[in-house]
Image 1 (cartoon, one colour):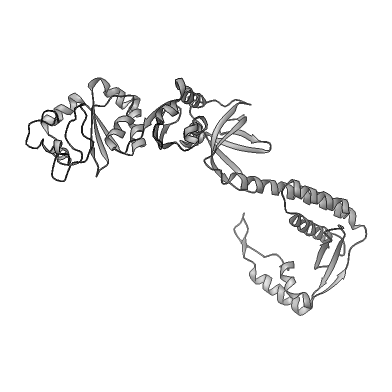
Image 2 (spheres, helix red, strand yellow; image 1 turned 90 degrees about the vertical axis):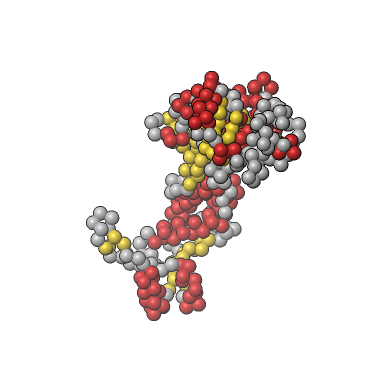
Length: 420
């Protein structure tokens, strides 16, 4: 092995971010394998390389017969029985081999002799070339896995390489590709060759062929990441997306909250003249997005989540996490949405089970059955001057909260605060 090749190995180790020592150990292992294939090779040998000059020597290990027999018995005991994959029958275990690491424990009992063959340099150079290329490929795969395994959920941009009925191949950068499976694609979307698309990393796993990177266009995290990219207030932490409910390709709802006074979370996400939300909708190929202000009060949050429908009243059951929503008759179909989509997304976003009733339907049920249980538990029954129901919780055993004006309604024939 010439000094020039050692310098080349050192340069490659630095360029590819591979351990130089690991490369040299791999070369020693490969040269030992090459030596064992030469005629008259010693049964036990090792290869040592000078890390500076690149000179190598092959040493025969002369093991005392008693020690050899002892080590072979130990190695045989450690072997596991194997079955033939075709017949299922037990196969005769191969002859045990002695591990060089094991032999190091008995160096004081083992003699060595230099048995480097003549003309072994040519074989060494060819072997070194093969080993270097192999280890570089392995190291690049390991580095790629280490780079991407902690990036699950991160937004990436790639270029479509090819697409078929099973998956779409997306190039993230040179020699790094990801798979967009059919199950992670949005119905109706086409992915043409050389098209640039955004997706989120769904999963990263390692295999013998290298890391497998799975990306998704259906994951709700895609919407969160796109808004973070387009809205500086979200990237800076001034506005937070508290929840996302999505039916890919059709409609999504996001709940936003501001952590700084004076910053409108909905306005920040919409942007000037709708520019920010329009960029997100464009990337999602026209998917509609409703931006909902988050509210700690469940009734108000549920009412907002049913946007664009107008809600007259929300009756909540905190124990069952169920909300009965009363809407004007002309808003019923809008609140439910096509095939129940709007109500379904609102329920996912809020985490509450939502039952939507029209005013006429609710009035008829109230006249027939009444809602005494609702009246004595949950929210205060007082109606404020703006026509909205008081958001406070009712006191135990009362229909009203602890405010004096609301407690003054007890025994009156109205729930209107102004008429008390």
